[in-house]
Length: 243
Ligand code: SF4
Ligand code: SF4
Image 1 (cartoon, rainbow, N blue to C red):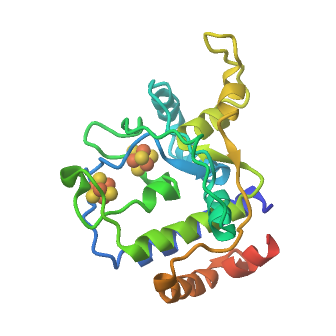
Image 2: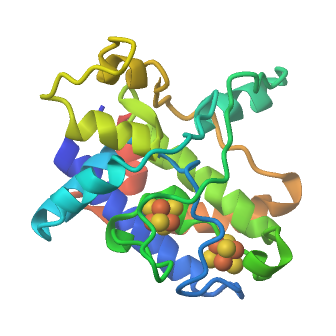
């Protein structure tokens, strides 16, 4: 496990590198287009800490707390990206029984359909793109290379935070902002425990899951990503250290 400050530095560098790579894609996404902003977003604990740090520095923590009180259903995945990739690589049947998906809008959307914490949003929000305006067509169309690069990047981000909480963004932020509180729901269950039951733990990389026809392009992306500097080291060296 790597230290929190280093994990956050690594995240920022990965976000920066990915944004530069993705800027070459021809996507229909634009400001105010937010059909993809639902209550299904997942992230690592380090990504949650990055959000909290950013909102604290910009004096917006109260805003976050208020948005987290907006009631709604929560989409919860039954497995992490690396758990899923591990099962696929081992040829095991995928068990999705625990997965809950909802299309309710994310509570962090403003009235103009902008995101109030856009600068600090997790990778799952940064990587969702479509070559058609899915707000109009009702369905996203993702280029194959985008899906493959997204998967390997999600795998790396999870690997770097292995052992820590992983799960729905709203659940994780409730936990991270409520660690010192003792709230109880209507059934008398301490809510941090109740939410904690829906979270998983980040897993190490089981190997990269890439479709055969995209392997050369993804390898080129990874080769460049691994050279990105993270403090005194590189992302590639950091991954080897945490393997
Ligand atoms: S993924 Fe779809 S809904 Fe989201 S910004 Fe892009 S075009 Fe709009
Ligand atoms: S955090 Fe922001 S970018 Fe992500 S789903 Fe919510 S509103 Fe959209």
